Amino acid sequence: AQSVTQLGSHVSVSEGALVLLRCNYSSSVPPYLFWYVQYPNQGLQLLLKYTSAATLVKGINGFEAEFKKSETSFHLTKPSAHMSDAAEYFCAVSISGGYNKLIFGAGTRLAVHP
Amino acid sequence: GAVVSQHPSRVICKSGTSVKIECRSLDFQATTMFWYRQFPKQSLMLMATSNEGSKATYEQGVEKDKFLINHASLTLSTLTVASAHPEDSSFYICSANKGDLLNYGYTFGSGTRLTVV
Image: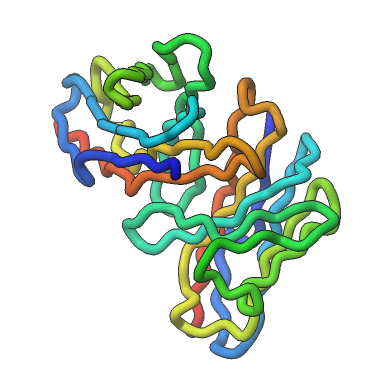
């Protein structure tokens, strides 16, 4: 069965510091992987996705993620955090076949302090 | 683009009443839509997969008689919480994919905050 694990339910960084949010996946077949951001009382916004093309994926708002098959990881990074990056971040995997259901990790709350 | 509209954004209802939530794909046709439930400070739990013209597929543990899903057209899926009770209070989110995961991924509605009093 496919799943994702997000390490660290809370991450706190200073403004201007590197952001690193960790995601490991489990899949018996090549997965599609996604990172979404959620602001309070809102839906989810797609940051970036990996769909078996380039392993380094660039997304919106300066975020990027690297697919590493050997480590079964898809960590999200941003070189310099902004206050506006404070939100909940979800890693997700698409289950291939059937209706392509999307399964989410537990989420990581990112706090950015001055 | 791929835009999904969800309505209402917030609803408060009395215990025992039914509530309908709409999910519309505005600029594309979606043969499949998904309904999620999110508890405070928790992740999204997939409730069911809504299929146009056929019965929804429910995840294990989700009461199909409580959460009624109708996907009557290629742009509209509805979730009805039947005889709602306070424990049904939650944030409900729908999503759809345009069918082209390579380019569009999944698009989410803005969610519906249901409060049952």
